[in-house]
Amino acid sequence: MSAAEVAAGAVEKAGHNAPENSSQYIEHHLTNLTNLGHKQTSLVDFSVVNLDTVFFSVVLGALGLLLLWCVARKVTSGVPSRTQAAVEALVEMVEEQSKSIVHGDRTFVAPLALTVFFWVVFMNAMDWVPIDLPSAIIGWLHLDLPYTRIVATADINATMGMALAVFMLMMYYSLKIKGFGGFAHELISAPFGAKWYLAPANLGLNIVEYFSKTVSLGIRLFGNMFAGELIFALIATMGAAWGTVSMGTGIGLAIGQLLAGSIWAIFHILVVLLQAFIFMMLTLVYVGQAHESH
Image 1 (cartoon, rainbow, N blue to C red):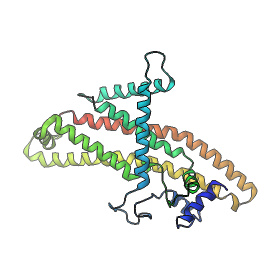
Image 2: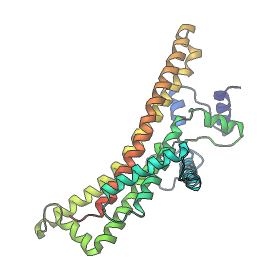
Image 3: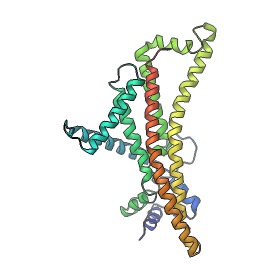
Image 4: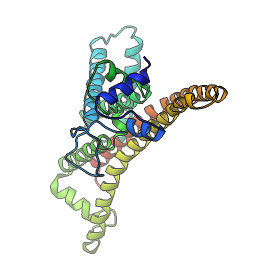
């Protein structure tokens, strides 16, 4: 039995029909497993929890911390292993970036940036898992899961949650370093000047700035990873057409799917690492700005 047949069997067992066309196939793979037992119907519903996003983000975060812990345990002053050398290079890179951006105590900020980088890389890397493999594994394990998405960063709830965490850090360091009075004065005096009649404009612009920073941070990561997941799903649908066309066209589709999938997977290496680096750098920049006075 093929992986696609096992995946379809798992879907049918859960009480759902297997995808009948490309649109349903893509929709099925882009639907999260929720606490409701069915897909979310309304655009905004705060009672819905995407269980697969929570599970994979927590597990991958724990794996990232476990990897760093294992490397730290085996650190040697002699000839380092390849893993130790790679991690040391990343640590030095993050330390240099944090030193140049954050002017103050970096005891918490630098390890935070390193953790964020590893966490986002691990979550982004799940996009390389063959799109039908999770459904096949669910079928083999006889689990009653109608939907499963394994790329947590392709869920806007996860990326916006991370962006909100960065926003809370910005507020924390602004209040810690500048004090309530200093931070309040900054909100109404920058960037146009400390004139009483400019206070509303200053406050409004600062509110927009903090809002746009938070939203753009979450949307940027979500948009890139969702687009990557969607393209992998579109490439996978090329294989579904093999049995509906002539032999020559089917062979062409098979070769096209193999080439397109390979090229996009290789290009996606850059996307996975670059988006993690950008998220880490913006986290450092925003936290660094909270350390500075205008």
